[in-house]
Image 1 (tube, rainbow, N blue to C red):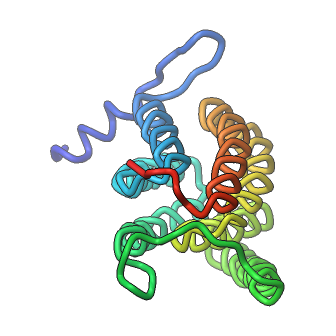
Image 2: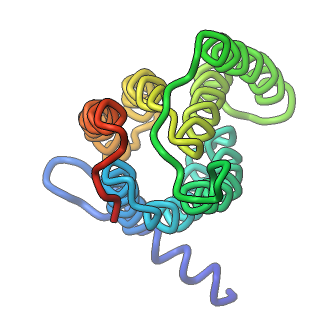
Length: 213
């Protein structure tokens, strides 16, 4: 048994917290993800570092639960997080920190079309090439998460609308897969996304005068 396999075996050992069971790896991913969203609400670019680390750890969690769409999504999240980190620091036309803005009507329709198109492609792929038992749910939420992450990387307020929808639906999916701690995490995410929406809307209304960390 090599070192990586040994570490993964320890990371996936049963861990009982109160009335539900989890693993050290899922617990670590939970904490990193909460930190990520908290930094995002604060518009701190350090949130992208936590996003990269939590995506890597959650990729391993989802692999063990046969949520292959979500596992692949974590790899995309890592790439988008690197892009988003740069965008938040140097992303506007003057290469200054990116301000909070909203999509116009065309942008909203484009985001919706991208979500539906991504769902169709991912659901077909998961049905055809994997043994997942939830291809439609996994594909729909994976596509929505990609749209939300891309909007977040450009500091579009609408990213929070997407995350509220996605996070509510993910609670049900993770309960179905017996990922109780992750389901709780996404319930927390719903509340944090509502807070994020209100905070970013206030910043946009005041011309982004609040300082980011």
